[in-house]
Image 1 (cartoon, rainbow, N blue to C red):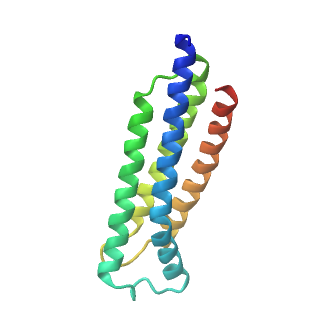
Image 2 (image 1 turned 180 degrees about the horizontal axis):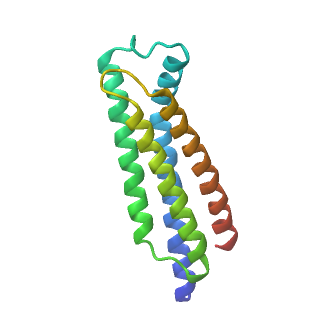
Length: 144
């Protein structure tokens, strides 16, 4: 196997590991996200037990830190030259996704109040970044 093929295989494994990691983190956070969304819809955030609310913020923080770890791994990866443009676009979309996650956490205050507009904006930012991530992953998969 030539060196260029090895680079492609290593990069493909890095991308696959990243997608698996993102999926795992999302699966861990989604039940808490649904709990918060339902509490907002029902105007019942204040009724949520404080320990549960704080545990949700902690879980979101751990998940976002996990995304940052995945990004750090991606930044260190060896990228085949012909994938460099898509790689940078993909990393930008992933950074935007992480920023949306952090904005969501920031919208949740320790006194069990949520800046609903900021929470909704963060959700929209994450959705937009997720669409971009999917687009760039599709391009990378076509080239690998």
